Image 1 (cartoon, rainbow, N blue to C red):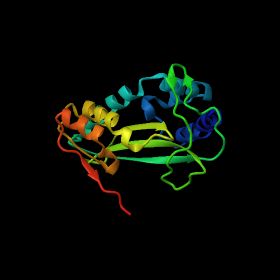
Image 2: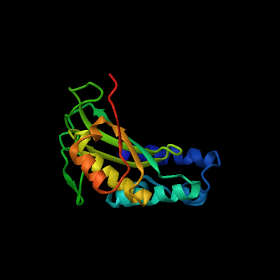
Image 3: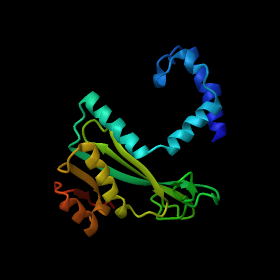
Image 4: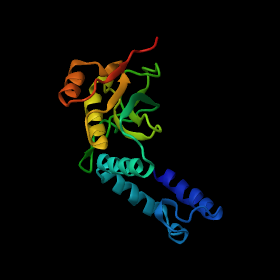
Length: 196
């Protein structure tokens, strides 16, 4: 992590300053950007890790939606497994500063690599403009079918209502998922059949 931060502060920031595109980037002036260091960026990333990222992302999505007139009437959800090479012995879902980190572990590999550990990434986009609306990362052995209720609740918070259309793959079609969405008064969700 510290090597990535060093690369950003040692190479990208000076390049942005040289190209005169830094002024106003990330809401800071070019003069302020000159004071960025790997320590400051590391502290900022620590604060982001400690933040309520779900609320932060929801607030950001709502602001983008309002600014650009994005309609939150239809959402498309999908997930993928991200494979890792190596041991990752400490990445077992441990507690880090009162948060549980996702476990890099073996699970159903969508990349057909059962020999590699993985994480599950879940992304939902708005149908209007393909704006990323919800994202989260879970343990590598998490089944897709158990991710939909939490995702749907996040989307209900973004949309401010429950009558939006939720499009996902066939893993959405479990009794628990369908009952939860139906009880909340949603439009019938759409589960796409798996292609072979």
